[in-house]
Amino acid sequence: MLDIETPEQGQLRQTMDHTLPQYPYHSIGEMYDALIFGINQVGTHQFSWNTEYQQRHWEKQNFHQIIGSYPAAQDAVQAIINQGEGHIFNSNLGSPPWTEHDFPVPPYYRFTPTPGTEDIHNGYSHFGRFIKIKNSRLPENYTGKDQPDHPENKLLQQNFFQLILMLETLWRNGGANMGGSDVLQTVISGIMQEIINNTRNCWQAGIIPHWLGLPFVNLQPKT
Image 1 (cartoon, rainbow, N blue to C red):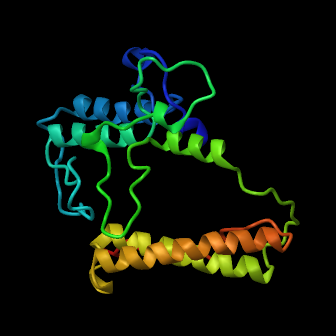
Image 2: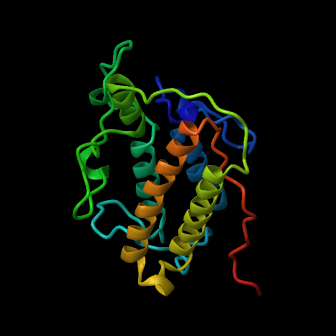
């Protein structure tokens, strides 16, 4: 995951061959360039711009979230690339060590925070945030035994399972059956915090966290 978040350097992405699905994508930018390439291969007028199952959960963002046209697709992909590591916007970027300020996100593509959330990092791409964490203080290191059935691991697995179910619900119908997307996102945030605590508890108990201990179900509607 960190490899694909590593920022690109140079202009190689403009000359890369994206016609083969097994092509090794070295960044978010390369991967999403391939998506735009594919739309062009199908043809922008022949491509299906069906928006029936799309969701808009973050109303205040500048960039497109409902994709019903080629310009909207380009705008959304650019937002993903900018938030991830599609480009380096600092043309004067030197050699490491870097800080988060070396990896800015253009203002138009920054996430507008929801009320009550912290927005101090929304101006930096993912890699910049990783750099900030690295430069601040890395978490304490632990060693552990492989015990997936340990009680602490079971708590982690249960909460992770619930997180996946709620994310599926959020993206499938906007959480309509759970009070709407705002309510569901609040619940998801709470579960994510619990997962952080569960993971820490596993390490502190001397065991390696195991995420997948419960069988996942297919949430797609049957036809």
